[in-house]
Length: 371
Ligand code: GLV
Ligand code: MN
Ligand code: MN
Image (cartoon, rainbow, N blue to C red; front, side, top):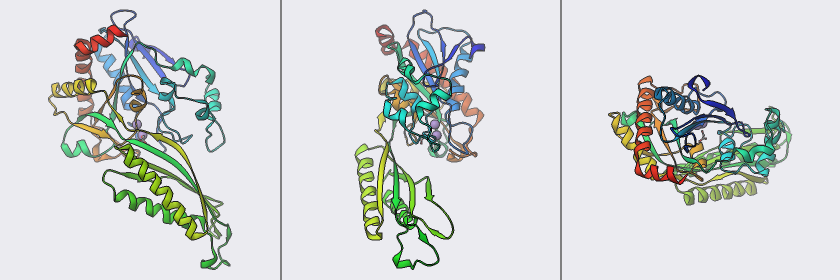
């Protein structure tokens, strides 16, 4: 960032920020970025590609100043892997990193608050990370993480909406006992109950168009070959572009868990970790992105993102939109995740057109004057 003449800093929530000024010293800012964290055994592009692309755009500007400044953002914690709660960095920008979230703990019992302190930051200063009134909008480049663009044989898409998501933790409890001496009909096996429910989750999601539901993590207490499991902890991730359908599905799956535990003489408790509504992207920005894609000689495609993104959080406060890059094989959250160099070139070209279009857009000029 510094090589590009960008003033770089880390905000109170651990987000990496770099400011490239506009023509006027006080010009308002357009935010461009994505996240720096990732999932276990990840690929190399989810998140960080969007941060690097923002820097590539600044590099391509070669010192040219626009009617607005550009703030490059590398969000600190988007995936929610460590604490089970995603979007920690972007929540700080919209003032939603509250006390309850700061108290959430990782598997080692370290709270978000403590982790922030251990990183050398002061959680009391988090309100200082909130967006200022001069933030004009937010643009995020990201890999699609799915097969749609590859199937269409197109490199880029404009994202018009991001599906809502629910994340929950379920604890199935039974009775730990001896695997050799306890007859099958007298068992209260928490893991067998959880397994029945996992199948029910898959079946339920298959029955609803556009619904996806995943049990991605399971832990058994104490977990030994010759012990019937007394406790099983599972996560549930449910997504749909319609919040009503998603919330109904979550209710149905909780009901299904209750039905299974009653029949098997087990018990179950569930905790909601995330209830994030679906979010529409800003229509002006989406149209400008489509125009910019057209100028690169590609067909503009509009799509809904099934993956969650910082853009859906930032959109609570300022206009936001995203540009997807084709994901070869539709693979993501895996080391096989990849991108094509030609698609990255198209993304940079599209981004430069977009910046010039926004600088010339009467609608954006109004926003600049208001900021
Ligand atoms: C973020 O990658 C998500 O889970 O959608
Ligand atoms: Mn991800
Ligand atoms: Mn991502």
